[in-house]
Image 1 (cartoon, protein in one colour):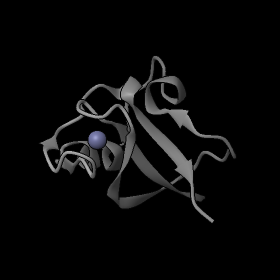
Image 2 (cartoon, rainbow, N blue to C red):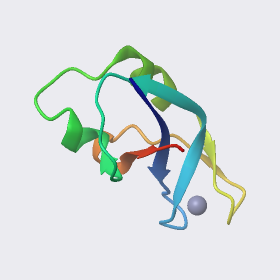
Image 3 (cartoon, helix red, strand yellow):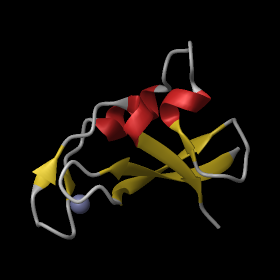
Image 4 (cartoon, protein in one colour):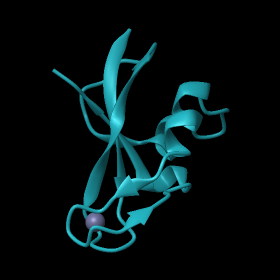
Length: 79
Ligand SMILES: [Zn+2]
């Protein structure tokens, strides 16, 4: 098991912003990769689906957005 933080590409400033949740997954790798890339052709884990339903606040514009495109959401290993 490894722990990852999810980041979403922002609709407003085009930077990546972190979701305020981490997720533990069976997969292990060391680079930032998109959820769509990792789970290509497979069902997304429920934990990731749940996290992606949350709104994220853009730290640049202060606006909230939902990023439901799995190719615009990234997993970044923590620690
Ligand atoms: Zn932003």
